[in-house]
Image (tube, rainbow, N blue to C red):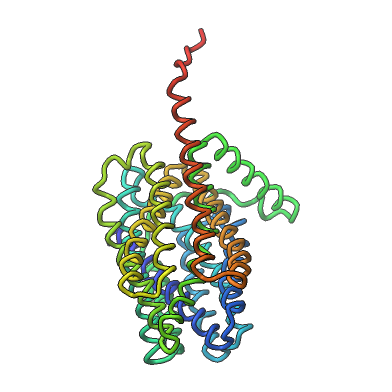
Length: 409
């Protein structure tokens, strides 16, 4: 069986993730009519990601990553189905939290295993295909969830959502690959104090690794601020959809994200053909794509005209996919023994950024309009990225101007 089936399996899992992202938010907003509850749904999902990010990388480096993916898929299917008999706000928040928790485990294990499955020389090409499949899943998931919820109701959407997770788990049970050997876990099983010490040593090793790689540190800073800014459009798009047509919020919510996803697909078809992305230019391309991504979000979230919203949603999808693909590629160039923890840190930064954003965004939304809130958060990303890119350029210029070090005799 082709190794690429693993990527298509992950796409099934992504399909479920994108469907429940739409349906959880739509059901919560329909039940409460409150932006505070809507923000809380996104925030607790992010909180689950924050908590699991603290140890998901360590688990991915120490245990069988394939089994972690299977268990999290089955778990997500079960908890999504619980919303059918219990569609109340407290249960929605609980499910959102657990989805955030388990999805991070899946993503960290999956991303960490890519170089082992396909080889370091195929990382950029593989990541582009992953982004393309993710974007296709996003298009199908968001548009599908919007249309199905609009015509058949949220319960049917939830059942299809759970089915995608179960299909993903079933394929992973059948597929085998030469996984990296998990470390011995004796130290983790010998008491609480030893566990804490082991976790501390792991985090210290990641910190030391990142600190001697300044470009990796800077890309992760942009990723952190990008997650902070991302809370504005995650909160803003369902509100924009309601402003367009309150009676068909779910439909327009799915359509906007779906067109964004089509832009992402287009980007992933182009990225592998740009050969110079294999060089150090990948860092600056990552910075530029972050700036263009934020610009697109600012434009279409400041409008109610569909002829502006849809083209700029497509534009934003192109550069959002470029940014995430290049970021994953940069992280996957790290050493295998620490890669899971590096991705764990990446997910932690993403979750922390989202968590902070979901605190700030509703406060700004109470005092300001939706466009102004988006301008502030995405303007922060644009400004910060320009500063970080200039610092990185300065560091590289200084490094190139230094004379070569002569070997000691």
